[in-house]
Length: 341
Image (cartoon, rainbow, N blue to C red):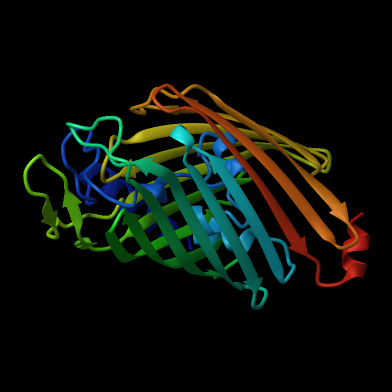
């Protein structure tokens, strides 16, 4: 296992240094499609400024790192629903369900839906609208598999169908997520690596009518669009961990193919596994982020455990972003649930 960890470090360093993932200059902004895939859907990770890869141990693993599913509780089913109030009246919805096949293997399904709302059709001659409207939406459907190989090492993979619709133009693709988590075994320290949204370029279909003063024209040929692949490397450390208090710190490197690399730190404090407070900060981001913060709580009931999370971010170019989520753990039996209370 030590040799495996060493190889993982070598490969990760090589990827970061040599930039195996495509690079398009300094910022590389707006060079890929399916941008909704890069929006963190859950309040917990948002509150930690998305420094979450090595921390994740809940249903949001379906988005962040499928290997994190192995850290879920021993119950058969876990559910989660998250809502993001994003910029300019847009929104992102996320839902996930996981099922434990046995002690070492879990599967899950997830859905992401981004809605930009109804928008007016405008032209250079009619800047206030032509009377027509259109809608922009994005959909992602994923199936995940996670397996724990040893007490310290687990891996996971996700296959996702993604689709973008802009008026009468659409683009669809299949992308993959790969990840692993490794418990180093020293002072409650974990290490994780993940590659998200790995896939091939695709060409949009459909057609769009371009309005002008003389004859309208129809465009039905479009340039191929690349996927927004992201390489992430994360570390987490439980500085304090006992029955009453837990203090987790996290560091993360994010290397997208269509933007600058960013670095983030996050902190989560938990009291008696009931209340959690979180904060974090992202460095080298284009939008000049302010510190993030949020909170969460676990509520034990006879019919299972309910988890509520909230995260707040303020970005200089996008304004306030609020994320709220609810998760539910279905106990294997009511007796087991009662024993936890």
